[in-house]
Structure formats: structure tokens, C-alpha cells
Length: 272
Image (cartoon, rainbow, N blue to C red; front, side, top):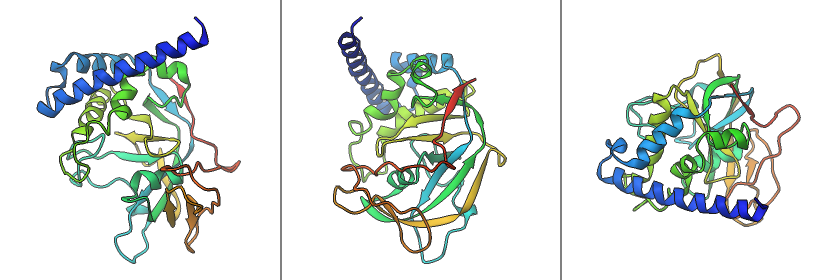
């Protein structure tokens, strides 16, 4: 098959996946707990069950929090919130999960309530975390294909905006499909999911299970100024209390990718 033919087939598969996931999303908006009553829900469950598990190699990951006062954040406060905190994209109310981004800019982009602001950012050292579902291609495109992409990828990213009737509403049907994928991953024995971000050029991790030995905070939280506009301001810069300085203008609507030092390799994963 020629390259153009392969690209055309991939685009058609992606379009069909988006249609399928939209149909599942509409079904879950009416019947949130009956995902397996829909044929696409059963396909997703089966794809996740056959997907390989990957191991995330040792690297730095990041988490951000919005300041809620003048007090300095402590590293102990930058971990996942308690189970009764709120529902999220990959967790139901009452479930504690650990959301992480592959860069400091990514953590800010995922957390900032507006295009610009001040956020606390904490580095976390992840030590070879096994048992993950790779939907971001971190372990290579071959593993991503075996994981059921593009259907699962569409379930996490492609239809979020289309299923969001009101961004200000506490009712978030755009989360129903990602939560269904997360439930399928939990049931299949995965400890978390690696997935592409819709807000920055990088990827995220959501962890269902971890130990203190596998994830540890490194250093103290830094307060950083984040700007995701298209102007000349930096994507992320120090506000006077420590942190990385950037001068590159960011991509419109996204945080500029961060150049990692030789001491700080990009997160990688391998098949188990």
C-alpha cells in the first residue's frame, strides 16, 4: 500500500472512530452506567482487555495547583486530592487517582482555569511504574496500535468538545466516555493510562494505583507564571521564587514545549 493510501485509510479509521465514540457518548449521556449495553462500549472493553501493559521508565513528571492564598505550598500538598474531592475525567466521585503531565508547561496547561495565571508546580520522580495502558504512543506506535487506537484515542480526546454542552455546568457528559475507558482499564488490571493531551504538545498519565516508592516529590513546589496566548510572553517563567525560565513565544492556545536538560530525560515506556 502506498503512503498516501495508508494515510487515507488512517484518516477514514479516525473519522469512523469519532462517529462511534460520539454514538457511545450520546448513549452514556442518557444511561451513564449502561456502557456495555452499547456495541461500541463492548468493543472498547474487549480492546482494552487485549491491550499490552507497558512499564513507564524512570523520569520526572509534573503536577500543578492553583494558589488559594498567600501561603507557600508544601510538597505533601501537591499530590492527588482525597477521594471525596470531586469527579474528574478519569475518576468517579470517591476514587483517588494521580494525574501527572510530562512537562511543567503541560501541568500548567491542564490546571490553569484561564489562559494566563500563577500556579504552583511540583516535580515528581516516577520510578519504573509497571502495568500501564499506553494510548499516547510513548512505548512506540506498534504498541499504540495493539492498544486499540484509534477508537480508544478518540474515546479520550477527539470528541471531548463535541460532547460538552456547557463548560460552566457541573454536569460533564464529555467525561462519560473517558471514565468508561478508565473503568475498562481498571477491570483489565491496568494501574493507569498514558494519553495525549488536548491542551499542550505532550502527554499525561492518570494512575489508579501507585506506591510511595514508585512516585516521590522532588524538591519544593515552585510558583510559576503561565501564559498560553499567542503573544510574545513566555510560556512559563520564574516569578522570583525559583523555576525554569523560558523566552520562546508559545504556540497559539498551547504551552510551548519545554527543553529538558541532559539530567532530565523525557518520559519513556516499554512493553512488558
